[in-house]
Every structure is written in structure tokens, then in C-alpha cells.
Length: 366
Ligand SMILES: Nc1ncnc2c1ncn2[C@@H]1O[C@H](COP(=O)(O)OP(=O)(O)OP(=O)(O)O)[C@@H](O)[C@H]1O
Ligand SMILES: [Mg+2]
Image (tube, rainbow, N blue to C red; front, side, top):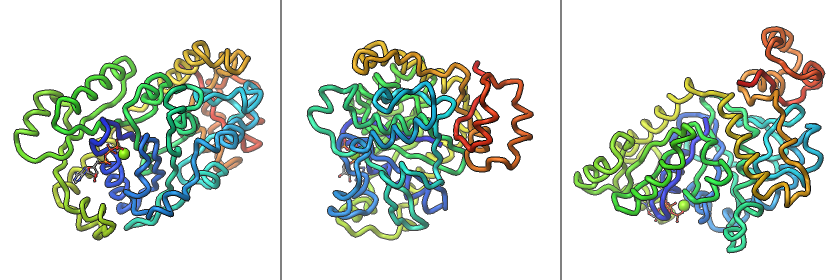
């Protein structure tokens, strides 16, 4: 499951992301935590000290490695240099999974021990003024978007992304990559205006969006949010002494988190989990192609000197099951699966790909 926490600066994205990650880890779920926010605070919120947080490898500085790995043997992507952040996977591409070891995790992820088990943490790296200016090409979040677009994830495994509600995520299509987006809002006009803007972008793309009210102090705060966002208000979180203690560098055991807040986290997980049944791989793939073509036309073709529309593999759908078979258990069961899906396969070399253990999954387009 892919889950984003977005919202206004200072609303509590990092705090709530970190609590949710701790909640998942305590329940024994597999988690990749990603800090894609302008202010990189997720590491410290998960308990890393300053030196440990500073030593985290930046995904943004490892883009060539990430691209080279994900590109695999996809013949439509001539080189890592022509791979932009929206370049979609196709036959021959390598897909990534939450639990596996792979070179992307080796280079970019570090384990963080939490009550209940370790999670993998990846960070984009700090943003500079230059990143924010030339949002498209240099954006650090491009590495995260490539990762998400090559990710095959099932239930009980989670990628949790702490990110801004900024314009770059709208331009690139990043905001459409999640099963569930939690918009963290304080009960203020500004908090709610970020919600409105997000909702507006999200509307045409079927983005599942819920509001998490944060720093709630009184009933009037809840009434205000309810009046402004209606049924999109999922849960509210009050000021937490547990969080205050954590910020002082003395996090209590996670099972000592206030009961109300623990219950709110449970609701977040249940709400995210409930979206699993509604997943539509074909729509998901279509959206990534849509944003790729948009980015290709608006800057990518010119920047790379290539026709990036040709990177789209028309017969490819990023689907969960066939991808898993192709990647994790080549040989085993794959004959049966291949038989089942044979009618939907559009390409010539699929069997060869599966045989070779290639990680691409293929099925019929919409
Ligand atoms: N429920 C809460 N209880 C107590 N303190 C909180 C709570 N939520 C957030 N805070 C505090 O508010 C401050 C801002 O929260 P946080 O850093 O999570 O926001 P953010 O949206 O990630 O901010 P930024 O945009 O700067 O990344 C932090 O000091 C955090 O500890
Ligand atoms: Mg933050």
C-alpha cells in the first residue's frame, strides 16, 4: 500500500507520518518510509540523532544508479540519461518490492529500529533553492516518483511518504501514485486552503484523499474542520505529550502513546487498507503514461534530445500478481500463470522475459 502524508508547512506531516510508520512497525508490517518533504525531518522523527540523520544517503544524488537499475533491459529506454522522472516501466524494466533486497535499497535505504521491528528509511536529500526553481528536471522527488512507478506492492506492506503539497507533485503526477493520501490540516483557514487546492487537482484523477485534523484542542476545532471539509475529515489528533517527549529526544515506548491517538492511527491504517480492493492497475498505468507524455512534451523531449513518448510500452500494465511471479519465483507457478494470462499478453518476448527472471509484468491494456 502506498500512502502519502501531505499538507501545509508545519501542519504535522512528519509527526503523523512517523507515528503511522511506528504504528505499522509495531504491528509487524513491512514498511519503507520515505522523506520527500522540503524540510527533511522524518529521520529524527523516527528517532535518529543528528549525526545519523545527516549520514543518510540522498536519493536525489543517486538518480543515475536508480535509473540504470530500473531501466533494466527495457529496449525503449536507450540510456539512463534519457530516463526522466516520469519514464514509465515497460517490458524489460526492473520492478521493485517492499520486502526484497535490491541495489536501490543498498544505495539509498537505511534500516531504522523501532518498537516492533526495523523499517527501511529513504530520503530525497535536502532541497536547495535551485531545486525549487527548476522544479522539473532537478527535482529530488523525481527519484521517489521513479521508485513508486516501478513498485509492486501488496497488502500488509507499506510505503509511507512524507511530502509537501507543492506544485511539483502536481506537475509530475506524483500525487496520483498513492492508494491513500492523508492531508494533514490544522484547524485554520490556511490549513483548509491547502486541502481545497489539493482536492481540486485530485478530482480528475480519482485520488483517494482524507483529511487528518491535527493539533486539535477543543470541539470548536473539530466543528470548524467538519464545516470546511465535510466528510473528508477522517480523524483528528490532539496535542500529544508522547510527541513532545519524543521531540526532547526521550521517546517513551510506543505502546504508551495516548489511547485516542493510537486509535486514530488504527483508523488511518484501516482506511488505507480498505483501498486495496479498489485498485485499478490499468488506470494507474494510464495515469503514469499521461503525466509522462505531458512532461515529455513540456520539457523532457527538449532537455534530453529524444522522443520520450517512444518510451511508453503500450502493452504494459503495472500489475501486482504477474510482476511478483516474474520477479520472485521464476519458473515456479509461472507456467500456469502464463497460461492464464496468455490471451492478454501483447508482446513477443514475454515468455523469454519470464524465463530469464526479468522483472517486468505485462498484461492487456484497458
Ligand atoms: N499532534 C501533535 N502533538 C504535539 N506536537 C505536534 C503534533 N503535531 C505536530 N506537532 C509539532 O509541531 C511541529 C511541526 O510538526 P511537523 O514537523 O510534523 O510538521 P510538518 O508539516 O512536517 O512541517 P514541515 O512543513 O516543516 O516539514 C513539530 O514541532 C511537531 O513536534
Ligand atoms: Mg516535515
